[in-house]
Each structure stands twice: as structure tokens, then as C-alpha cells.
Image 1 (cartoon, rainbow, N blue to C red):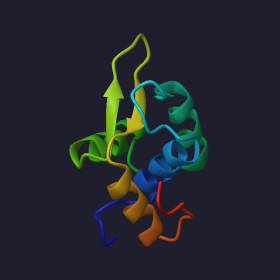
Image 2: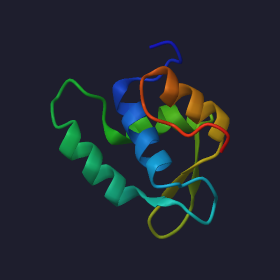
Image 3: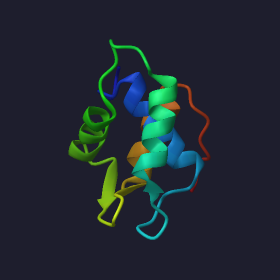
Length: 95
């Protein structure tokens, strides 16, 4: 992939983008995200949910909100939009 993200990490990023989890008060629950991820990528050849989240955190796409259950939101919207748009996902320009 041109931006260094896999199909699994782009899937997570797209869910956060579609649900407009763009601010620290609009995080997405990790358990719900994990269930969607597991449903989509149930095969053994895919990285685990935690590994995909680590990649997004390390590259600066998302940030964690520490709560009873961790929540995630997109911390760099321009970078996230570019990555999603480059890989064929629908994004709104000028957000």
C-alpha cells in the first residue's frame, strides 16, 4: 500500500471516519470496533485487532481516550482523508 496501511487498518480508519469520530469527545468504543473487525476479518492470515490499532496509533492516524473501555478517534483528519481517498474510499473534501 502506498501509505503503508493494510486493508485491516484502512477498515478501522474508515469506520472511525464514517462515524465522524474526529474529536476527543467523539471516540468510538474499542469493543464495538473489535466486533466489527472480527466479523470482517475472521481468517487466520489477518493481523489481530490490537496489532492493527497499534499501527494506526504509531503512525499518528488515531488517538486513544483512556476510559473504562478505551475509545479511539481520528487525530489527523487530513492524513486520514488522504489515506482513505488514495485507496478508493469515499471522503468529503474540505472537512
